[in-house]
Length: 625
Image 1 (cartoon, helix red, strand yellow):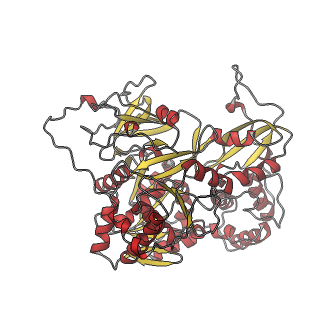
Image 2: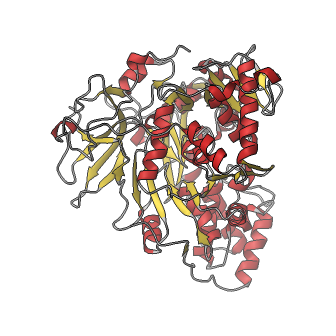
Image 3: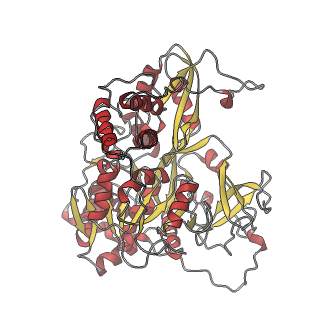
């Protein structure tokens, strides 16, 4: 991959004024002699200061142990020197292929100290996708606990505990990144079927931390922060960089992240003060936190539902709503979850938000819908190795006074309420958010259409019940749904695999010959009517059939093997609570080996009497107002 030319990059200099909502920047008077604010301190410099000030403070907790700041400094310096000894230089890309252990934050910081940008290669992804990302990024090296990760031949592989020869041991400490140096490349779903790597500079990451501090989202005092998001998800950046401020990082491993009871226990064990999660994940965790002190919540990745907003606001839970695309360095707008219903909030310092119509004219009327454009120092360089795609999304900013300034076209629609609040409306394209992941439906369609026995493919989003959103695929051809799903699981990450495939004789078409996605039928397995009545066993089985979208279930069937996931499990529990008025917990389903074992748990709950009223949450401290 060739590096993006400097002339194509975002201007890092401060902008003359911050524009909120749809107000053009040119209308804001700026004193000619006003000095530009100082650029935020680089995060590596902040890390060095934290190490010097508090060497014995715990820096990282993980399932495999803990590190204080002094030990973290030694390990990252050693690995950075080893990377440089293997030829890694400023501007290179280094893959990080590691599970959620102590090694992960060590590797990310070491890559930065070596002068390179990290490229997350989640070991949970299929080997074919990891190989594509590694080749597309043009990696100079890979840090992996595996001897032979799925990367192109010839790419050096270093273990996370690697060290350089003694004479090279301190060379990494001399590196100071320029704000334009790339910090990371995170791959997101691509509408053409090809994942695209978003390349973000160090200056933008430093601005993110400084902006959240100024907005009051990050406390001044040291915090204990749960690292909950996958390293392949851009929300992880906002979480793990907190270590550079001197905060303690608690790495949440995959097993505890998927188990609400174990995650709640982990939060309590380490007295976690800050937790970033999607609203969907909160619904799974909420039950486990009733009666406990709730950490400050950072909610992003998908819109906060009205019910969740009201519960948090009315309960005085300390929570923030965060909005921002990967291309604008994670978060650009934030709001405390208080007061009126769901809204996006105010831009972070330095961010300019434009609400524009299709001709790039400001949309100013209350209730009028426009598209959000973002500008400021948080913009990414663009899409690595794809200048055409970059030019189509990072467009000239007509409201800026500095020449060459860009703004990013988000594709998100919004409006201003009568009270002036910025409210999310939807998308202008076929991009969706599902359980926090950004998904281009076109990528899944391309993957399906490339499989044998498929003549045409379409993918849409189906919501069989409120809160249970899933991908639904449709094909024409001779392939069976089971064959197609098995092949997709081999090539695509789990969040891109549809819940089911419906085979059609022909695709519905619009008058101009394109697939009419609105005319696609209800997914085949969910078209059967629900049974009414019956004993407890039959009602449990019926709920499984309804939620999983399968025509039949057997006593020995395992929920996860039938395609169930954590949100589907939550829906099963809620439906049975409502149907049977029983005190049922999510763990009853997650702990059950099969349908028969879960049915026994439900029968015991039914014999114990009716369900108690849903308990209230407990605020850790007064909510931010």
